[in-house]
Image (cartoon, rainbow, N blue to C red):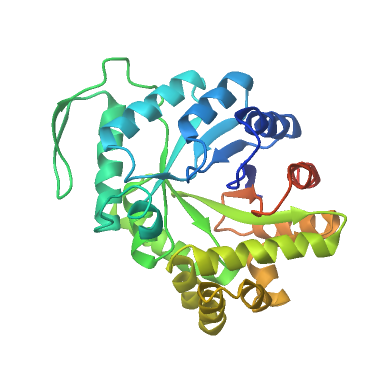
Amino acid sequence: MSADREVFLPVAAQPSVDALVGMAETAEELGYGRAWLPETWGRDAVTVLTSIAHATDEIGIGTSIMPVYSRSPALIGQTAATLQEVSDDRFRLGLGPSGPVVIENWHGADFGNPLRRTRETVDIVKRVLSGETVEYDGEYFDLSGFRLRCDAPDPAPAVDTAGMGPKAVELAGRFADGWHALMFTRDGLRERHDDLLAGAEMGDADDRPRTTMSLTCAALEDRERAREIVRQHTAFYLGGMGTYYRDSLARQGHEETAHAVHDAWQAGDHGEAVAAIDDDLLDSLAVAGTPDEAREQLRDWEAMDEVDAVSVSFPREATVEEIRATTEALAP
């Protein structure tokens, strides 16, 4: 069975909230199943997703990814319940620790043990969403007496987590309802999916956790432009967003390239970093080319048994027009 096709609204700054809402409306018209929104250093996800919920009727909405350090677990639970209400049960919550570059430098919080904090956050959020009084004694959080003052959502929204390392993905399988994957080759995804299933077995999950694979995509008539902006985006993540993406790619058998890209980017030689990503690696990590080429590449990912949903994401340098062109070219 082919995976669901979803859309990951742009990480890069957009002209307005209305522009993001318009992208979600277009995705709904084109048949995408869900619009995911990241929360990084631009507009907050909650306000934008609320606006999208009011402007649409059928498309699912979700956070990919809301950091677990910038809100308390109780507030995340309240937020998830409220977004489920305003969207008429179309919301899915995606959580993750982010990384020390974001958490320590921008939020001023101690990154600490991200796996433990993510696990405790998921535990508390699920208890909040159940409508029961929350009593919790954890390493990071001690809660007593919290309970929603509104009706608990029925159904409660699913809770996913993001992860790249073996233990992080195992955690998703054991405690969450799904896993968000980013910057994996097909072989790398299969290897981590084994960790997901191992976690699900430890957690006695009733259903296989859902795997959402986020793929950076550019489907443009200008083939070289499509590949250029996806290559640049990939180099930025490997070189400029801490060491998690670098280390993940190294675990997938591309250690030399991962370190070459990271080291060149950190040295300020962005051109060298971009050039270090050859065509074979680019094609193993992303979707980039003409509309026909991109559609074929995307179908290969959707055909994987390990993938339940493919999220069409966009490179940082893509213009609003290029985002729309790619969205249309890769419509379900």
